Length: 155
Length: 80
Image 1 (cartoon, each protein chain N blue to C red):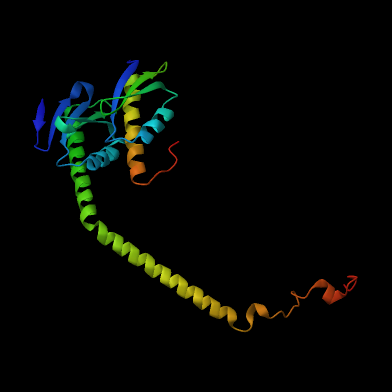
Image 2: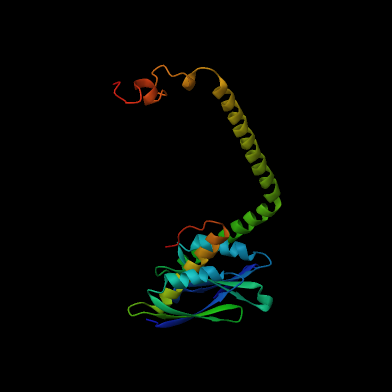
């Protein structure tokens, strides 16, 4: 028994716990199909093959990891088609908003870089201030020979 | 239990690198011969004793999908 939904055609094989979907790549790009397949590999076995004239269709075979009936296969196919829609939308958004996101990221990195160099400059000033490590009240920086003489018997 | 299975891997969907990695990862459970196909690679999977070639082929397919997507997304961690 098969079911046609315009963008995809679905056939169920309950005896083999398998469902077959034909996806039109004019509507769902290859990357969307791959992305949906990736989401589903934990849930079931997925096989992808190009088909049709000009190889513009992708045949997706979903096989349940455990035996399942028609209802389980319908759920699997429906879930896959939903995921397909989600992936296709993500790709479309990525294409339209990609440059804006790159700009925001570049701006954020640039700001962080400015902050870092500002802190470094401030650090240099602090280093030049008198006191702190330049003072040696315990005489740690004084060489042994200078402190106890060349034979070293001072202590 | 099937002893061998033929798989077609379309090169517009799967990367050669992912297929090679999968062949390497599955060498313990099957002998896999790779030949050029009509639109990619044709693989003959001959399962080793005790393994079902059909099941190995399904697992192999999932592995190739995972590696192809992970590499494309730059999540290229250690597959082993």
